[in-house]
Image (tube, rainbow, N blue to C red; front, side, top):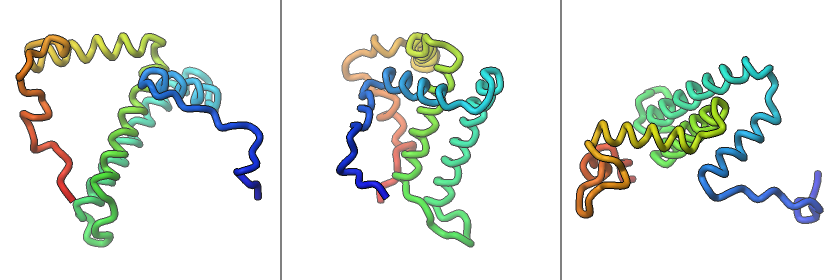
Length: 142
């Protein structure tokens, strides 16, 4: 058993910027890939399905939908699992392109414009955001 207090090599500092973190995670995953590059791309895409399944499991657990198990998760667990989906998706996107930030931003602008009729940066002051328009998707209070 090692004493963590006597460790001589400091733990690497995690980046705090979203895109730096995505790139660092991609590098870490890429350095530890067990498969060839082509198989790895498919496996990273499949990892998304696994993460989405964990969201479903957490929702079922938070609502107690399985009578045999009852309530096994919290809405905080659901939030964490959703974050895992987003992180996994961004790392998978980084696997496909080094321009992940630009690709994602461009796509977000298209979706926002198509859905709201405007680009995110041009939202007028005082205009309701999607979060305030549809409160039904907010996490239920404990």
